[in-house]
Length: 377
Image (cartoon, rainbow, N blue to C red; front, top):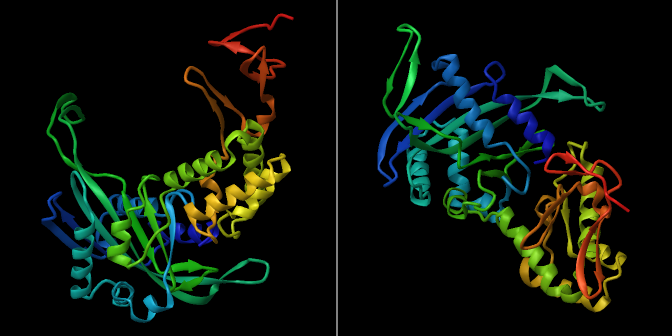
């Protein structure tokens, strides 16, 4: 799914635009015991409550692809004979009304989720009558290309608020308010099947994680029988480690600037193209940037070997998980320097009288603790 596909489904999660036939909930204690459950039409809720439920599902389609949104690819064998894929398909086709399938699904979620507080499992089904678009991309509401049936799930912590003083309008006074159980933003979730090129793709799904350091591998394995890519935080740590260990003494600031500029330039190229696939890089892409800045062929070869050992021979790394392309930060044990990534050339390194220095060109607008200062010649 690309940005446009995701945005089109997110627009469905609106009070006036959705055709959600069913909303189900399963309230579970942190020990895995069922506290309560419900099964209603979404429109059975007051509008204010409906919008809060929809906002939770919207969160499961938010963030960057490759960081909080993790694509799932099912194998042909999983689609044909996979138990998990068959269960999700049955839930979708029955519009969440097959009790046996839904209860089995809940059991799978409970077996795979470990939380420090109670949590709420939410499920919805929607049938999207996909409007036809002509060659110019213009939408024709009177014509439909297909009805896209899909389900969404999100798992939300339910936290106990602290007692507090609150204002009671009818009394014009403040009174004590007891602790309450409140549903928080989702920690994980998914959409099945994938919506690609404005059509259904049963070979794909989209997982969500709130924490870029946790891909909820057990959850994905239990409910989809699939593996997800490594967490974004781990990918970034591994990539920086590969550069450091492979390049060794040639891992200079110029090298990092070159790699980062390459990533940032490619991101700018596709920035406004909502239909572009998620931007990824191969080891060859990074190797070209290393050669351009003068890294020796010996170290480039070492990078190839280390990359394959860490990620796999044909692995692609998401651009958003490489060297924080939207920031440029230089750190020592005592100093942190943040630079506009578009102006990283302002920072360089020098060895002066045997000491290492970080030099920053400062032409104008220099401030120290908010006070404008002049640099004496």
